[in-house]
Image (cartoon, rainbow, N blue to C red; front, side, top):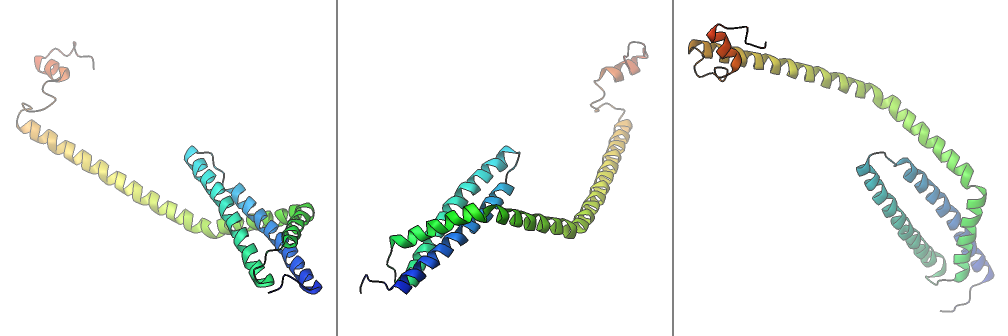
Amino acid sequence: MTLYLSQTGLLLLITVFFILGFVLGAAYDILRLIKGAIGSKSRARRIVAAVFINLSDILFFVFTAAVFAISFYACNDGKVRPSAFIAGALGLALYRHTLSRPFQKLVRCIFNLVVLLLRIILRPPALLLKALLSAISAHIRKKSRCARSKRAVKRLLSEAATGFEHSPYFESRIFKTAQSGDCRKSKI
């Protein structure tokens, strides 16, 4: 194997890595917009967001290294050439200085459009689910109030049958003042 590369082969290698730098710059802009959308006000979500952001950066750079390695293998039989790295860096720099802002605006508009469509599509089922859960909750609250009042009536009737002797109310001041007949001492 020779280290010699023809001029057309070298031009092809430089062009591929220049375009690769351009594409990886656009991919990182998309990742930056996703990371910007994750922020939250609660502390727990901020911690999760920070972990996601750091992990996504690490994974992106691992992905970039893998793409470069695969590209070297595909274009140059696995031989690493400094000119390819320089071409990739130039492609990234050119992208950052020319198309980065318009591309970010375009991606942000697409992202906002997708969020708006999801809100329109998911709003009716969400409202239906909210109404259903509200009705179920009201029914459960009503049943529990009825059950509590039925238990209270049953308890009072059983205590009345035994003369309130085993009642927790028997020891209370209100019950004693009512038994003694002196209702003026009661602070009711």
